[in-house]
Amino acid sequence: MTKKQKKYLNLLIKLAIVAMACWFIVTKVHNQKNLREFQALLDGVDQWAARTTALVIVLMMLMNWAIEVVKWKYLSRSIEEISWWKATQSVFCGLTWAIFTPNRIGEYGGRIMLLKPENRASGAVAMGVGLFAQLVLTSVFGALSIAWFVATYLPTPDSVQFGVWLLAIIYAAAFLVLYFNVHWIESLIGRFRFLKNIKTVFAILEDFSSRQLWHVLLLSSARFTIFTSQYIVLMLVFLPGMPYTAMILMIFILFFIQSALPSLDIFDFSVRSFVASNLYSYITTQEIAVMAIVSCIWFVNLILPAIVGSIFVFNVNYVNSNKS
Image (cartoon, rainbow, N blue to C red; front, side, top):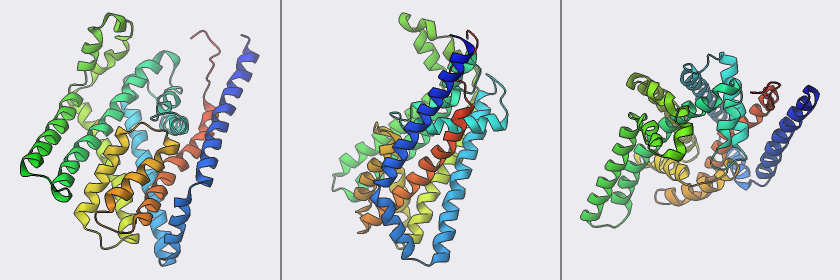
């Protein structure tokens, strides 16, 4: 393939990715009645309070993804030194890819494409460590919150409640143990003959010390706190009077279920809205308001960054001019 052909092929791929992302976004946002419900919520409160709340939510979103940029730069530093600008482009480019791929799998491809070709496989593994840290927090807080929910709202015998709590603690502990021994994955892969060819890619897991894993977990905790706080702020403004502890623990359950169910980012609002409306029916009768809040956060946290990321898609070379 000539240089000119590769250039046009690169452009075609970029246009296809952006077109697909735009089509998904426009289609779903246009048909998203819960966003219109949120507009109705905004109209029902003081305009200054509504604008301030919206600004706070957007600023939290920017903080959330800024921390992810820091985390990605930290994770990739042993593979390839990248600038802060390149790290930012990588994160947002990945968000655009994630919007139309199952379970955000496209986020890997979108992000690592800004690394050198020879570093992309190892970059995907390093990125996986960061995503796993986020999953650990979701699983730990989610499992324990589900045990609390069963004990608080479901009529179950004490023996069943004890069993649920025990399972939740074991489940949470297992995630923590596996995370801080992430190098076990590399050893496990080596045991399978048909996977030995990719064992070298996972060798990077051996390089992560406990201190580095704690650092990544701390950054992930900051992100977890921010997007939990987004829900709290909106619920305090638009649904005052809900029990504070129950409100927060149900947010953790929402995150847990959402992470466990396979879906496209673009359909993720349906999962979130359905789960949230059923969960919060135990403490409020304003299910429509809950669904509107969930849809608002879906739009701010996933759709807006994906739109920004579509600009950075054009900075990626999907077909290299050299043999690698």
